[in-house]
Image 1: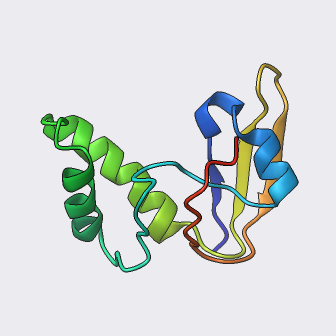
Image 2: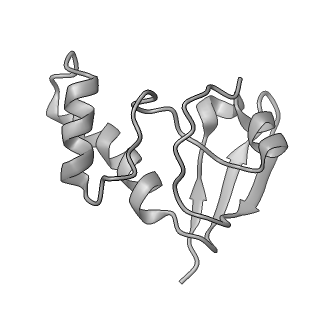
Length: 107
């Protein structure tokens, strides 16, 4: 089944980088690859290490959930939409490959 995902890219801040680079991304735990994470529990451990100041189980659950959906649920063939910055435009594309770690900020 093909799913449709919205990657907000900080309210469109990174939309142009996505378009030019032909990718979509999130910036959580930017200095570590999550390629070895196979479950939410794995991501939870990475998150707690990277953000020890987050003590609310609600906040941690929301953040880990977002990362898990991006890392574990978005699959090749799925559709991703992202809003453009300061417009009502929505850009879209089809996921061609799975997760890849890129440590550089595209902005």
